[in-house]
Image 1 (cartoon, rainbow, N blue to C red):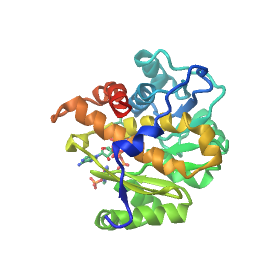
Image 2 (cartoon, rainbow, N blue to C red):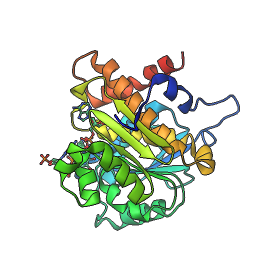
Image 3 (spheres, rainbow, N blue to C red):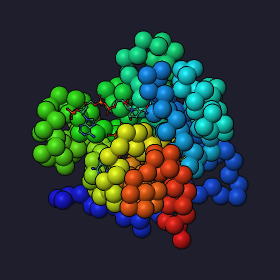
Image 4 (cartoon, rainbow, N blue to C red):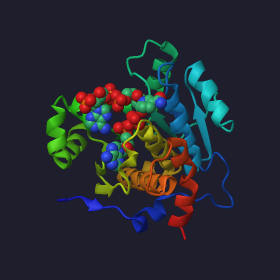
Length: 271
Ligand SMILES: NC(=O)C1=CN([C@@H]2O[C@H](COP(=O)(O)OP(=O)(O)OC[C@H]3O[C@@H](n4cnc5c(N)ncnc54)[C@H](OP(=O)(O)O)[C@@H]3O)[C@@H](O)[C@H]2O)[C@@H](O)CC1
Ligand SMILES: Nc1ncnc2c1ncn2[C@@H]1O[C@H](COP(=O)(O)OP(=O)(O)O)[C@@H](O)[C@H]1O
């Protein structure tokens, strides 16, 4: 694939931040999460669960009551009150033009915060309001919508459209598919999935959570070098694919099952 370097486990190894003996939950990174809705509460659960399994100092989830209850039922370690955050994950399972005024206000504050941003699904259309370094995580249809082109054009030349989006939006783009393409000021990388069983609802929400955790735990490095965002995105796609392969052992898996395999995938990476 011209210009795209295939990302490997060796490349990914140094992009998972292992807490040091002097770290605490705040210094290791706090991920703020604004995802889910009454219509799609599951997206919030899947993304938060993935972030926790990827390793982060704290996940702070701010969403409507229904997804909040479900997130806490699945992951009681999650904090659901406003406070200090080092990076934001926004958009999975929600609509940017939501009439929920509290969620809309939280989203506007996060976009303007200057903190690194992971913008998924419903937040991709709000990328123009991002102040800090940002990565968008569209599938083909979402990228086509963002660029006002036909999805068939994106499907025919995904490398061209991923690069065009990164150039025109001035941010990192992770275009999802069997081969996931990442472009940004830090480089252009491809990650080939080890299993097509990933083609199932909710796996993208988990990927966004993995990336959110990697971004939150590198917030300080991102302040000096926004270029590492592309390498973090490629690492997230690699961890996601390998965890899916591990979860299904060649067959299908649940998304929560994929998440449960993330720690072993990270441990194997660091052996
Ligand atoms: N449990 C939960 O809470 C879950 C919540 N979820 C949340 O649901 C929200 C909506 O997500 P969404 O992707 O289904 O809808 P949307 O972006 O409007 O797509 C519209 C059209 O695009 C196409 N299309 C779709 N995927 C494509 C692909 N990979 N590659 C190419 N084309 C693709 C397809 O059109 P078709 O190709 O059939 O013509 C489709 O009809 C989102 O917020 C997400 O986070 C989900 O994660 C599931 C689990
Ligand atoms: N055929 C496939 N082979 C491998 N991976 C796939 C395939 N189709 C989709 N994926 C991956 O599955 C995930 C789907 O994400 P997305 O389309 O956002 O779904 P959802 O919104 O339901 O979570 C992405 O990580 C994508 O790269």
